[in-house]
Length: 412
Ligand SMILES: *Cc1c(COP(=O)(O)O)cnc(C)c1O
Image 1 (cartoon, rainbow, N blue to C red):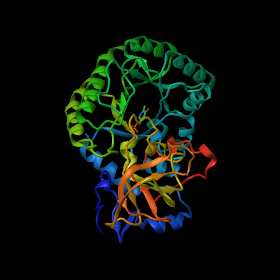
Image 2: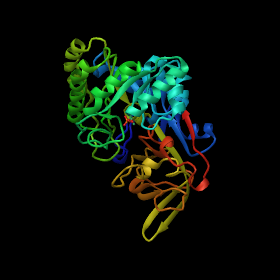
Image 3: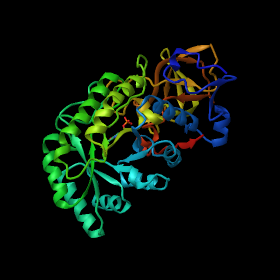
């Protein structure tokens, strides 16, 4: 077995190669494709998920709780497997809650965030006994109303929109005017309302951003989040039980991206833990991670159905595209389009290279999976692999666009 030999594959060494084929879930890719019976498909690997969580735990303080943010990949089999690896789930809809509650994860370790939760979602969450991460004053009143109707006490944590930002983040979700959370300045008033409404106070949720590869920026945001919670503790109606300090751990997608230095993040957090345990003795400190846990464990696989030449360029036309993988096409929040790491999964050892554009079947110029990439020379029938596809892949794509067939998702 050898590891990916070509520079364009940089960014993912999870998968090995045997006889020129990418191996995933111990199967050569072409055999997996035959087993599935169609392309395109997504394949997620259990062993890669296991290793990722084990490695993370090795570097994080032992008392830190790891939660999985389900929106990164809500495939039920993946969520079932993650239930055996992490300490809790964070959800963003009642649909996700259904999948989460089908697992063995106890509701006490599940929280539900997101602006604009509908009344029925609040009611379902109270009935389930999950913690609602509250995003507005109005939502507190609505939870109290649903709790009264059910004869239950709703569990709430306040999501804080902090005054600080997570620097160098792919997506900022805190600081300034935001639709997420309650502004830091209004938290004392919100805490008084929690008490007045008789809700069960659980703690705080401070989520400031996503896709960050800079350990320094994450460390700074974590320290500020911990300090903010300590400052707010005297205003709380009861001890802080849960202190969710967010996540934002990124993964490398593009050439030049260096992986996040998780060891440094863990070491810095370990230095903070004694002071937190002293100031907030009842609190469990939580990080919630989506793409960091699942993103590198998945691939998207699509087959070449045509090969054509146009004015000096070569095009591989494949049977999948942006309708299954919006992020790899560059249309999911990216400012400048960059290629995800790509391979020809059944020609991994080939040294005969060719510069190609890989495009999908949709009638739009946006449907690009690779732009002028140097890859092993491919022909009709070959399997194109897009790495780093375990998070925000199928779930974040407009699958109905152009009425194309659906992709299949498997956990191997
Ligand atoms: C999207 C989101 C996450 C997960 O983000 P990743 O970048 O996948 O880690 C976690 N928490 C909240 C509140 C989110 O909105």
